[in-house]
Image (tube, rainbow, N blue to C red; front, top):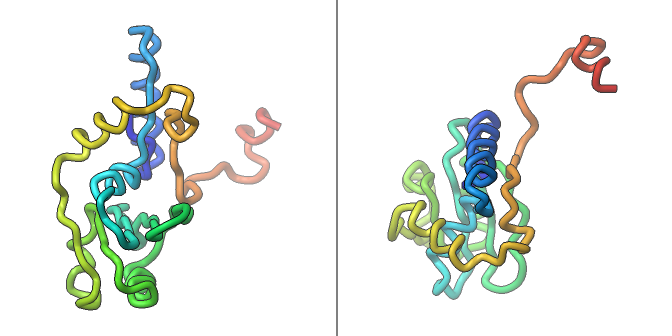
Length: 162
């Protein structure tokens, strides 16, 4: 099941459904984040990679993978900040389902990697070789921002949970 990033409701419903099916079938449930899917597709890439995913908002979901070392924490950035990041860290390669949105504003030094296969195929391949005790495959949501809806201060919903 995808861990995200994505909409709060979509992630919660998808994860709950997958966990329910796994429980009923007595099968393990693994979570795969979408950044990892695009990183997996570009495994042979020697240089740095920026994965940029659609968010249906002004900001896009981003995660930077340096040529060596650990990936940076995922974040949400507006297109202008992504262009600045690409310019500051050039040369690098971009991958993800939001690269077409950026094509016209990125410098020519930014290489774009087209998708080589559907996300589901790459996700299944990752899950097939995952260790069941690897915490990065836990079916837990990957949220990159706070929710839009919150309880008002002093509301009955907050009082019952205190």
